[in-house]
Amino acid sequence: MIIYKPEGVCAKEIRFDIVEGRIKNLMFVGGCPGNLHAICKLVEGMKIEDVIEKFEGNICRNQTSCTDQLAQALRQLMKQDSKLINI
Image (cartoon, rainbow, N blue to C red; front, side, top):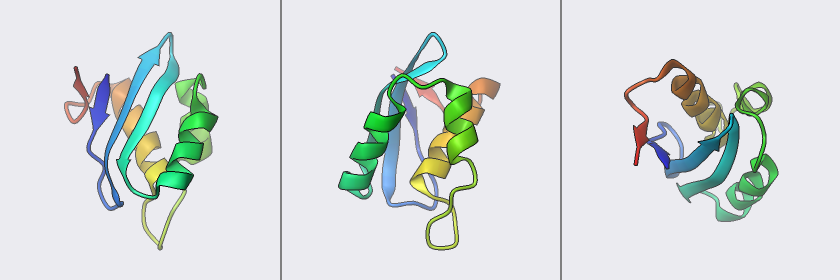
């Protein structure tokens, strides 16, 4: 499981697995439960690159959003940034 600590959003954590380049078991801790639960269902099994393309730059309240933070987490994962924790 990968855990990402987002910044500037209501969600406190974004948790997910990557299996063969696809997102599995996405879960947001905190945030807007209805919307985030729907997003988790929508992206299940999607390629990392497709999620980044769809969500990067999506803003909420004139700043980042939970989906933008997910895209940033995936970008950092691709760069092996230390902010991502594998457990």
